[in-house]
Figure 1 (cartoon, rainbow, N blue to C red):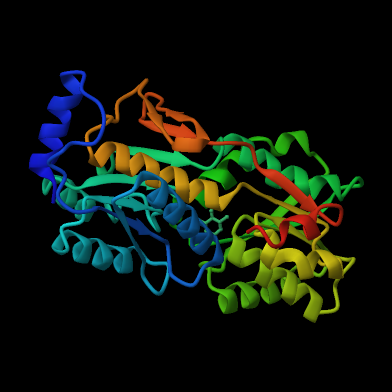
Figure 2: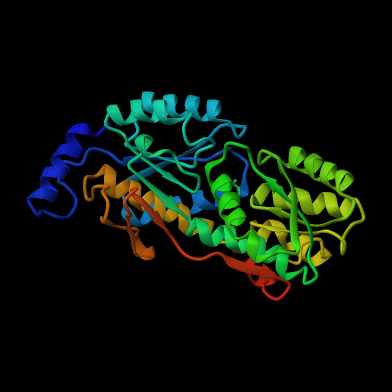
Amino acid sequence: MRTVKRLLAGAAVAAGLTGSPAWADGPVRIALVAKSLGNGFFEAAHRGAQEAAKELGNVEIIYTGPTATTAEGQIEVINTLIAQKVDAIAISANDPDAVVPALKRARQRGITVLSWDSGVAREGRELHLSPSSSALIGQTIIKLAADELPDGGEVAVLSATSTSTNQNVWIAEMNKVLDKYPTIKVVATVYGDDLADKSYRETQGLLQTYPGLDAIIAPTSVGIVAAAQAVADAGKIGQVNVTGLGLPSEMAGAVESGASKSFAIWNPVDLGYSATYLAHQLATGKAQAKPGAEISMGRMGAAKLDENNEAAMSTPFKYDKSNIAEFKSVF
Ligand code: RAM
């Protein structure tokens, strides 16, 4: 724990001093907490975190998370990190509220806490970093589906967990613009919990319940792959288009087979890199999270915090047959 160090660093900032403090004791230990382990999206973010650590120097990344996408699992992870006296916790939360008491305990012990990707309620963190504007993500996922359905049709949503902050916000933003698509009918929302097998089964359920289904929007990198597989296995390629948010490396086969005409995502490596940079700035007292603050994210520029101490990165990028080959080896 670096409470003393942080106070000193804060004083150094206040006094206008810059550079690494000479009294630094060992590496700055930053925990990158995933919604769950084994998810390629978080593994890509971890690569970015390691890149930032190398660039910053004297930083140890502790990449961790529960085995399943539950808040309970994350609370256990947080408690372990508190016991390990890490300097910072950067978490993608399975639930915006359930992790707050554990994160508050961490903060009381001088640990810097921020959320990234999937947010924590304001009282549980210093800042939140979104990959992109939530409104833009919501608008993007419905547009991806609607653009392939010029005559309209039935669309279902396959989400991650029902408590996941980011998917819930994106779906809410999507719903706000549905009136722009009068011929598109959203018939159901189901939850695959970012588990491949559950997402596959939920997709099978959708195909059975809605035989006239035209598209599935899966705003989850795990769900979209499983949904595309279920559509292919059901012989429904060309009938049901799977779209949403996914990794080019994991979706290349689905795009080639035609199960997915297109999908979108931002760069998860950059997201992990940026979250790590922010954690480092806060934990070393080089910056403070407050509305209007501009905090360095290294090669990604600065995060400008809004009135809720939130910042957003770039726009989602669309992948389809024209560019998937180029990006599938990147992330
Ligand atoms: C899954 C997770 C993650 C989300 C991506 C798009 O990997 O739910 O939080 O940002 O999908």
